[in-house]
Image (cartoon, rainbow, N blue to C red):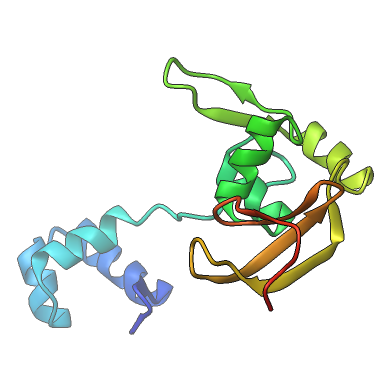
Length: 154
């Protein structure tokens, strides 16, 4: 029985026993009505691709920080550039990484310099998206393109 790309363990066990008994991939495939390549894949197993546990990671990528903060990844990059979020450049190409403890501190402080409570969905005239505008002391800006606006267009 095949379920969403995974093979029922009892069927896999049967295939393993047949292989131990000296049957070839082709012979096993004929018994189960599958290709010999599929038999090989079942016997080899498939490594699970689980998402990393963000709580245990020390350094986070911009996309992971965006996921934690509920923001667009470009907003995380811009906040890093503007100094709102502290980041570290780790490669000659300038890849950003964020320390988990810095992100936790940012969340505890309630987003120093950013009033997340005043975020609202509005139309951005530059990127043409119905997007989240984040309001700061200096005005509101689009969370996607960074467009600053004193008065929001609803």
